[in-house]
Length: 163
Image (tube, rainbow, N blue to C red):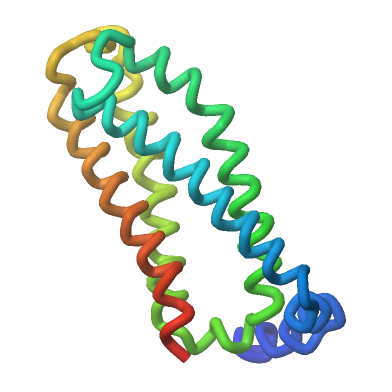
């Protein structure tokens, strides 16, 4: 079975059809998706802006990260759950949508960025937690993160305009 056939099966399924044809369900899921991405991107932005020395300058980076992480994961869970349901309802359309494909690539990169950050520069956070400015690699990770999440949001919005 090809990926297109899988997408078509999802699209044609009872769940996909129910979501797509409901007067309310699709809109509720889409609203939840926007709330999830807002929560995730907002908390990520706070951490990134702290790394760049733009906000919460008196707070240690590890404290900011510790406080934001539960909200970030909540936003991620809501975003993935609602996004999966939205995809399910329009899978065959999304298969051909270049903005959806670009969004998926950007999401993968946005997932790799904190993985690399936490397994490299953040391992030594105790040495630079209150430093001004923070190490260049941490600032670079923050800039990459802000850029990726902005692009993801733009691509997500652009999906509606590419058929």
